[in-house]
Image (tube, rainbow, N blue to C red; front, side, top):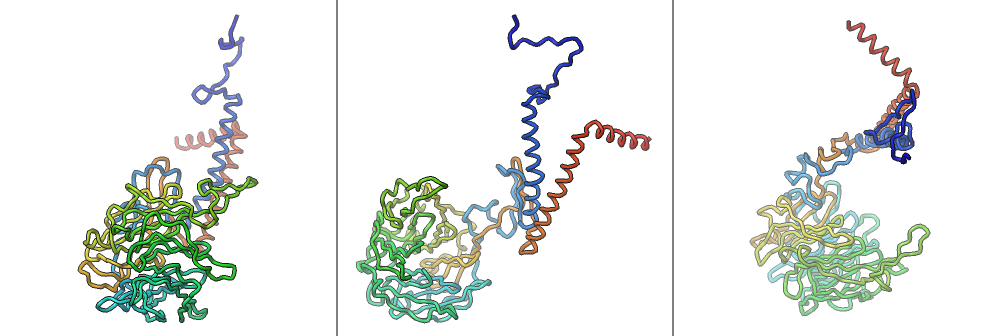
Length: 503
């Protein structure tokens, strides 16, 4: 009896089947046919898809990745990064320099920065001895070169310092702040840019939008349907936990402030930013002094709908009203600031939170930290690179940070000796990617980086040329494969003639 695994005897004159792929497959079997079909499909995708795509980006992009560049072993970065690690860490700033922007007209202390359209405003602040709140407003125009010289803007009706400011739905709001007689107020002023000049020429007090209680040094952020103010000091100068939101009504005006879920701990002189569906509050002071922990408030959002599926509600938010905060969490461990600081400049850009300067245990520092919260985990850690720190002689306390185009400006504040400094420091926010990389299964090479419409058209021509050339090559390969015997004979004849002529 013979089993199914016994070698089959070959009859007289029979030829053993040809094996391929290290003897694993029969050359005439379905397995080898399937492997060949997959390989030819990949070749077609490579020749008619991937290569033309790379040809386009080789024309219009500064760099092009070829293959899968995993675990880069060689990295070469452009000189414009000025010595930052290569590749530069996400969020790193190209070293700070004295900015070309003109100095602030006043001391640049305790005021608030507000960007409204193509203008930047420095609102209120303190001056004199003793320091008293002022009504001063300075304005500069934002253009391709940065900021124009500062000029006097329309002053506030009342003196304010440490006010919260926001630009929402085409209007500028100055919320709360200290006056020249009281440490906190509840007033709200609104200014509307002129349609012709874009400048705010008048400030109007909105009694209907007065805060539920006096606040100074509140954090403020704009959300899709209104303005949220968080924490701040009351008239007793103690940090608070209150959170209020003014929602945009159907008439295009903000409705009175509604109370939201309070902060898990008091906070004043902090910053706030919306990242994804969460509000982050960082920096500032808690009940014990400078705070290390950052706070995250999750906003209830509308159910998500995918295809024909039923709407999916985030189970964590329960039946919380859409747009409200349903949960606050504080950071711990590496997610806290390594050392809390007082009077730091706080700002956000592209979903990244920054902390610059200030004082640590009463000593001015030049360090700059940043964190990029993730939707699932929030803040994991704060990063730092020595070259992104402020200049050794450029410590700032009480300064304000603002992103203008591809630069961040640090305005006002006091230096390490306590002297007021109305000048500006500037750092580039976008280090360039490596121009050449070699890694496992791929590399990155420089591209032509042709810009504008001309660059796109040349890129399209490059892609079309690569596609046409590859199509002709594949067509020739298909003809040669279909006429294998004749092709071999033709090649042999050509090679034979060359050999004969060589002899």
